Length: 180
Image 1 (spheres, rainbow, N blue to C red):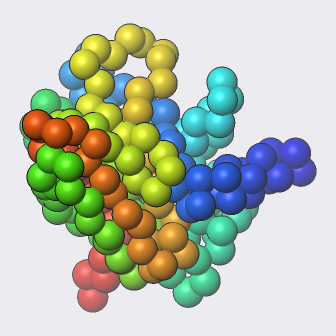
Image 2: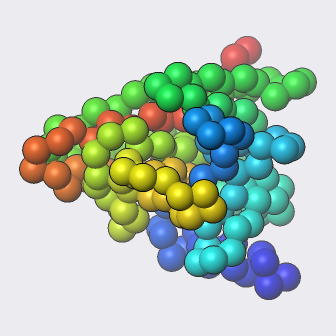
């Protein structure tokens, strides 16, 4: 019960924008917004890490929205290569696209369902939550580069701001699409 309250509070506090903890498969390989075993991504709430899969399973409407497609993301990022695979027996598969925002500019994005964003270059904000490509990653430390946006927030629209005056903000957007 306390965990569900904490997960609801996280959605409310970030206005639907939630920081995910990095999930390393190997030294250079990360799993992004993934909900499969053993590749679980976790929601970062202070020092606590709660599996994204559990949040979606227990609070589906809070995280995905009513009547939204399932979040079946199985995403692996290795260097500059993103590999997406649909989870078995799923009607919806993951998809991605790259977004580039010029220095000092902002962009409001709308999407029909939940999305995850991974920062590969630059720094900025998504609503009130900071995002940045980390300069150095320490094992077990929280990095500010991976964000989950709930379905309701994505439908309302979230504003992404590039806070740099010189460098572009480059994000990978991961989402589920209907493959039927």
